[in-house]
Length: 383
Ligand SMILES: Cc1ncc(COP(=O)(O)O)c(C=O)c1O
Image (cartoon, rainbow, N blue to C red; front, side, top):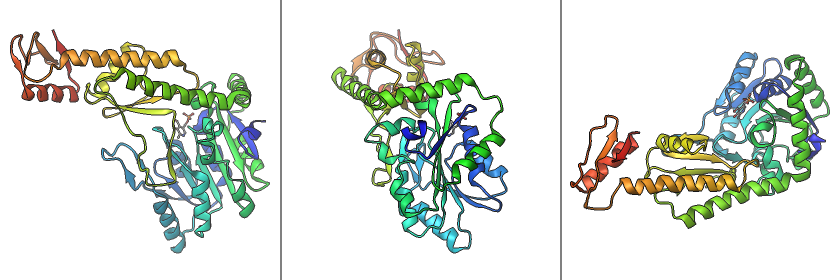
């Protein structure tokens, strides 16, 4: 039933996390003296397991980067060129390993990438795609076409193709941690190879609670999957509307369309980035939000990443909006407008030595200094 839900030929429940699922997938696909190309941005488990196989491993280094260097990706042209060059040098890759979706929400259009590679004459027929963040993508029209198991036309055209992907089901569905699934599509012998690799690698005492949570989550998704995916998108849209109607000063939604000129790169609509640099450093705002019981998933300098999971509701969105509003209000108190006479001490902490005394004028130079302190992680206290 689970395989049917994801358009797979077969699916396997794994109770040791996606690190174990990745090891099983790699072991099922890899043969002696294999040549592998692996995306450098893959999770550590891919690198550990490929290195401990006897395969010759080459790496796909990302060629696209955001200005601050925090987020990177590969262009289709770079991938094709790397594979063709290896092939022309007698190092045709037997297996390619890619990550379908990054932590920050970049989603590669895997079906179109595979289609283009095969049409370009790449001889690789085994693809392993780590799709750890992507379970929910199968339940919404805007993301389903990008998913790894959505490759029916390719299988008709290339009957010798084997494609395997892994999901950390707990990352986007209602599952216990370490609940993972391996899905596969391809030649008739592929499910058996995965079953054997699973038998060899997986614990012989799989966790029943995790298996039960996987089963329950699939049942929920079969019944309510598209509704839940739409719910997560509605939460994001309510959040955006709230931000614009509250007019929260100094907070800016970062346009998530990094590398948007590359048509194989898309973005997870349930992940939102906020630039808070005019309020303080990312670390400062994360700390304030934590005091409001809001957990920030990730910081990229002064950009906060929020994951609108199917398990949260509008109450959580409203709490986030009101916490951001509160922070922005206190920022307005802390940073008076041009040439204002200060009514209070303005103190960067540490070290706690006042920058401005009551009655002193706050001009642009002082204001820049305050901003500089904020950027460097100091608390600015008006007392
Ligand atoms: C892309 C990716 N693959 C694999 C894993 C490993 O999953 P697990 O922690 O369940 O072993 C992670 C974990 O965050 C991940 O982000």
